[in-house]
Image 1 (cartoon, rainbow, N blue to C red):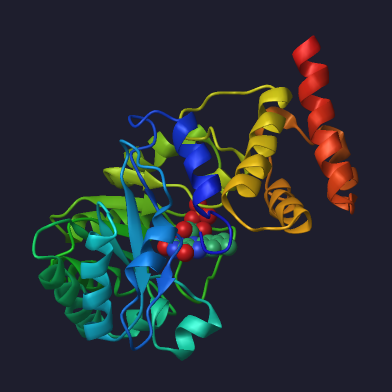
Image 2: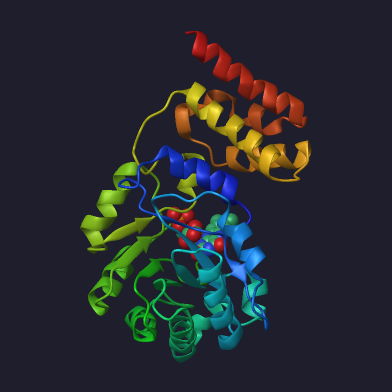
Length: 302
Ligand SMILES: Cc1cc2nc3c(=O)[nH]c(=O)nc-3n(C[C@H](O)[C@H](O)[C@H](O)COP(=O)(O)O)c2cc1C
């Protein structure tokens, strides 16, 4: 997720869930304008660690040639698969006719995917992520087929439409319709809030895989379903801060900002408990880190 799941966070989640529980992840999208992305930028998105579970490099753009060249460079950068984003509803993406703007043009979606498939020449699979539609979900089957026709090996479908942004109500039957419409495996996405939802989505829609978005920001163990104690939850966040310090140039304020961003979603270990407002009101980075250290120390001593 752009602006949130940079490699430090993503890798900590990957090490805490076995590949059977968490079969893979994607990078934040890389925005491709009219020029191909340099290999070193793509490498940075992938991060330095390699896991058994593949981390797909996600590209978002509308210029076929630049996208195709970027896909080829993604392979050079070590990506085990390349994913194309047709779901981002942000104004920037829409202005550039990329992301979910392309849901209005299934022919262009097919063309883009096909250009990327050709560019990677079988070295890695190319996958696609769509939303259920632009303003309504009437054409979900057509959109799913557009991805399949372009040669996508897997289709991820976020069941909200572009207009629905991130509304709490979700319609999983749209995922079931996409599953019916194509032969390729489908990964369902949208509205998973707890571990048991993973199986429920599979049962209700027939999708082969399930993708978790926002709920994974609050509970990195959602994939395994492990219920951790508050100490372990606090340790995760401390590890995250330490890793950011080690691997990036982010200042203490920026690192604490990243932690606070996660705390807004956080459910694991009931870490925030009744003191949610208090945690979120902490302004000083040092105080936030001390609080986290305090929880791990107290619980570890019990
Ligand atoms: C802040 C934010 C950033 C996101 N960035 C991306 C992205 O880079 N690529 C992508 O495919 N989806 C992105 N998404 C969408 C999520 O991957 C997911 O499809 C969406 O949140 C629905 O799933 P959920 O209901 O489980 O959260 C983003 C969502 C949010 C809230």
